[in-house]
Length: 167
Image (cartoon, rainbow, N blue to C red; front, side, top):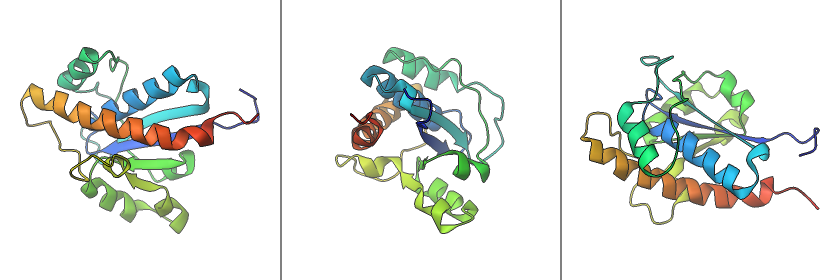
């Protein structure tokens, strides 16, 4: 990659940054790496709350990722800050409650224009909200991961032409 080309930066946001958004971050990063565009994409995640700052991803999320061949063990939770709008090109909320919170934190219309719902990229999704598996059985993590994987794949396909190196 040319040194003067900035990577496309996306941050995925859920409540505590230990379940849904870390899964999205890891999956999206894997899509970028597998496509050969890993250097052209930065994938991050954050939570709207500070309850889990510094903690690893939920063990059930790590296990669900591992069952699909992803590694979520390096994740450490952090809270979204208004400066994330400056550092990222796209801010992806995992459900509408996160989108509402992020909209309230947007300082400008440019910040607000960076917001999107993850499932809005997946035409087959039956809802716009990725359900929170935190209080559910471990099997729910696999179901949620499937939703995130499908929508992240659709998002990556949409972004791929823009991140592809120009000839």
